[in-house]
Image 1 (cartoon, one colour):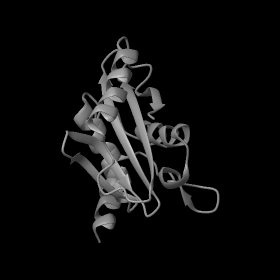
Image 2 (cartoon, one colour):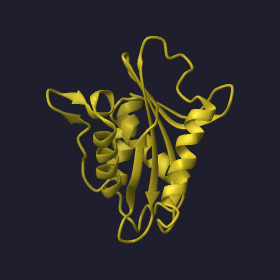
Image 3 (cartoon, rainbow, N blue to C red):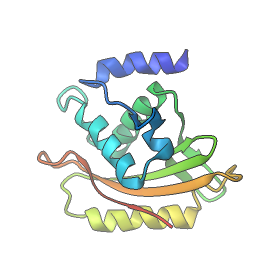
Image 4 (cartoon, helix red, strand yellow):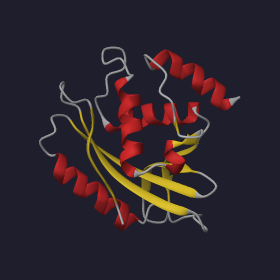
Length: 160
């Protein structure tokens, strides 16, 4: 029921449906690479009307991705606390945990320094290690460039 509510809400926010799958009905976030996950997120963000739902800070960016992922029935945690801090997004699957740390740049000029900050934050705060068990841990740092000609995650990296 919860995912249905978020799926209906997503119909109001997103201008078109973005498939969360590739291949044989495998979720991109559950089985894909960093590049494929960011590609999915950029497709989702491009389906947001810039005038109705402007992405003007990190909180809005995080909320839109959370809305999409919850509408696809993913186990998403926002600002998940651990003993050292809180991560932006954690998406849990039976065999994989995906940690995403996002930064926001209004003009893209500081994207590289923000990416480094996000990557260091994931490492220093040890995001995703709580309740990991035997699951694979994918850690992604990304920067959203809000420039009118970009409006997407322009720089990103897998954090080891």
